[in-house]
Image (spheres, helix red, strand yellow):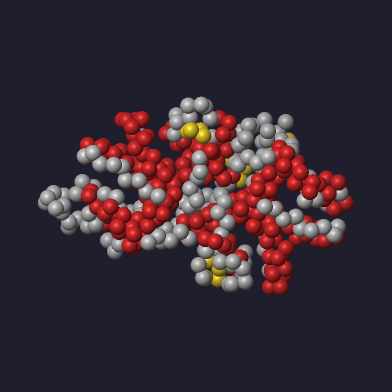
Length: 401
């Protein structure tokens, strides 16, 4: 099932700015599996490689130093890369185009790479399995016994099914945390905290064990709408976002977010003791898929609803000559009226617009003897904020007044 999700403002207030501001459709990341196929089908692999597989005419997107780390960085890189990319495509006879849905899938694929391209060290992971106390409760197979001759308290690694999926792993770890907290507290033992890299190393070790029989992991974003429900049920008593933050709550937008997917696993595990000490018997247990949905919600809130500076965005709109084509000479050039977009502006929609209209934009700038308007990630953020502030309320092409 394609996980591309288009949500309407009237139905998805957690993801949108106040409803009075805009009723436009919001688009968030889709299916990483579809994105992987698009990466090939649309010809990206004719220039780009991933971890050495593919062409070498453009950066290898599997290398951490070549891959943008946030959606805004990715949108900026794609935008600035446009003219060079089109010249290369023309030489190869390629004319790919991406709509917003396909761009959402491609973004999901790029962010799944954030997990794969953070390689773990199984040797360090094996050491962590011992030093963090995992080995005190979990054997590798059911044939082992403890030094005292008693069976281990936890299930053996050979029965674990979710080490191939970092989000499934996080869900199991979270639900397991309450029991671990009680047992370690009774024994006077400290809580085993993990950095993101340590969790990556631990997973690399566990996935490499013959007993685990793990397959290659693939990140599939969950359902952010359902994640919002999980957040309200399990998290909102202590956490909030931005303007909705009460003085007694922690504003998650002011906290640094994980750089890689596995960072969410570590962050949730490290957070469990505090949550357990506050919630006690009310410690929330996640059902199947809840963790994936929650992470999708947090991901969308943090990365796709960033607020820039609209005043700075207005100046960028002027200085980059966007105003010339989209306002002053819009009729002559045939440029779009950006105030009437049916989609809220975001890194995804800006990238999709570049794919759909970029060649025509480049031709227009060349006719007007203007430079292609390159944008830094911070400028992209401010420009998106400004463009959203000007939207005339519309929903799927229908006025929403």
